Length: 637
Image (cartoon, rainbow, N blue to C red; front, side, top):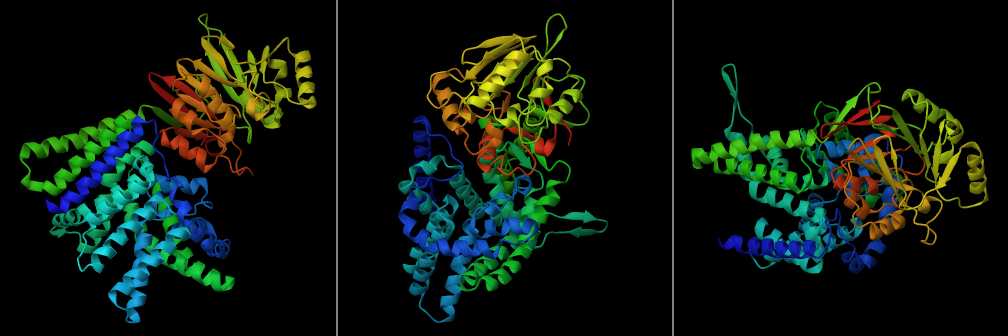
């Protein structure tokens, strides 16, 4: 019991900070804050040339290995393309591109080993390893997982210096208490929580899981096959981490990676090798660019292996199981993890009734949560569906969205929000959707990627709702539209209307906020209710305009569908995404666009609320309809 005293204190301390932070309105974050980095800024500045040299040495590396090698060594994922990032996420390998305890362990082992070779005493080896850890933290940046691993290692060093062997669990507790005292907001930080929980699982469960796997056997004919100790340990490590981390992961992305444990077992050994060779390449690049490039090619080999593993498993059938989102889904996952742990750790020592209850919870919980997650958004592939409510046209880097509604008399009504850049592209979309009349044309603002195709649709439009013109060229376009269409209205907040059985209202612009009345900041944002589908369309609004809307729209409710602002740019509001909490997010974006849309930041915000994401550059044209309480999504690919 004495060895559990310090972990219990750490757990209570964390819980108090967690409750206090949430009750004060602090939202969970995906990554740590920057308060600690200010104390290491001078050392980070010294390490900047090393990071630049490594980046230059790995710049020409090809394939998925070239995208991963920097992330495996320094945590820099700037070269990671969205498709590979999605594959890593689907196979539970994303953590490999975030520098963690494994990297710190490599630094410690390498430093202690080198100092031992020259015969230095123990306290000198510990001091040298501590200095190298500090330098490594400054080199990769003070991420939550790195600092957790570094402080845990320092706790072990202190114990060894005092002549006492420090166990992993107390050392973890010390690191939690120490870091939360310095940065209390990490109590609601996803990265910190995942790092601590993964370590806790590995420290407390790995040996028991490994022993359990070794006891089991598979009978083939007259032979019984058993897992060897090493193979059982390789599988036990990711399983132990997954059991404790999965409830938190559900809050970030409500899916269950089917092949995650197997993918980790295959990729983890290569990750350690890639990290070691990457660090060697960093040192070599600081001496000579050519030497750094030669060593970087060695680091590329295990990096390529990891990328190929991710792509292979991500493309297998049922690579991800949908899961119930929000706190409910996380709670179910926590109960399931506890049940699995009880079954494995308790084994036959548990009463038969308890084992049956735990097994029933596992089977029933998985089935119910997968069904609930799958019932939220159903993705289908194929031809244009017979009936649909919302369609996102594939017009490249631009917006064009159709809305359908049938009035009580059975007449069809159609609205079009923006026209994309090209008349040909929007015409193709209308033809495919069998649209020959537009009852309401909404032109959110005057950028070419939103009104460039207007010539193809203006003759079909009966009414136009348009954003405020900014300059003389915008005024000219407005006058031309007023000549061609009977009813042209400048949009203002508070406007509302009916289209068939659908209803709409304007959220923005407000007509009074300076510098936010035209262009992207003044583009027309709307809320729609189409056949029971609540949808928000945010045009190209930036973070400032979105948060101004939030300040005025007190009753802004969650939606089923969100047309993501500005093609998924970085200038988006996390508060808006959390307030709307969409089930389905639509991103109209061009393949390989030069703007980097959608950005990692925007995608992370959507994933954090569990939104299913549909993109025209990935899925082509997207049709959405409502079937009972489910959204049915039909795409080209």
